[in-house]
Image (tube, rainbow, N blue to C red; front, side, top):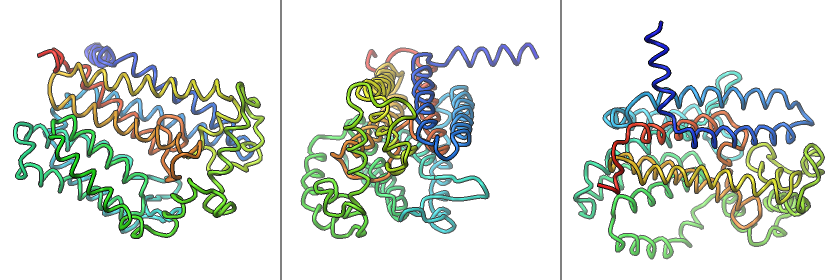
Length: 371
């Protein structure tokens, strides 16, 4: 028994206290906002679920930190296979929610596999990039990398989940950049992406096109696709400097604001806690993301650096997109705010990402960029 506790203490000492504290503080703040957002229809249930997800996430992070990330990368082929199976299974037996078939519902449990596949993709793609790091700019290495990403990206898009697909695309681009892909590839890719925008837009489902158009003209469909953007902007704008007070926001408490405990939790903060409450969210997320990229810089090798870059990319894109759609400058694509939005799958996946980063931190020797 003594040896067991010594082992547990040894693992606990490996945690990056700064990152862990920031993640827990963000989650606690998020639960406070969720309590207010759901006060009209049963706060207790939502807070308990979120707290449970956070505790399970902390346990998952503990297990991940206890394992050297290189050992996880050595299982890359199996993790990739499991990721593909999960996404295919979602397409077969998944339940469609708001146009997206990305949920598997088992009794009272609702699971979003694409959230967990993010973790698997970062592990497997980091390992893949490490294997080809000396020849990444050759087509022979680049094509398999594109296929690696393309399979996951295609399956996520088949679910109808454009928002999560964009997360994967951003992670792919940032990890390729960090791995040293030549700028000419990005230039060619950027030009090709711009040229294909009209075709991509026309290939989207009608509800996806309307979500994009509603950003520029919410009044185009004020009671439909523009409704979320309009109400979110009203909520954020009405908060002023200090807000209307927790549990006192009109948009929030009367459920005028849609998806208030999930996609629009930032709008709840803006209305009830004002500019000050919103800035605290921005500060916490910025600190988390900065810490992740700092650990990337001090990692011992390419693999660790890439894992941290991938995790940072997920958090950075989701935070930017979620806040952007809440203030009406980006399309509403159903992306949660990391650590703040209600959702067990999202919370658990975020803590798994934090665990990966802390594994890199705990197993580092000398900083990669210092060698």
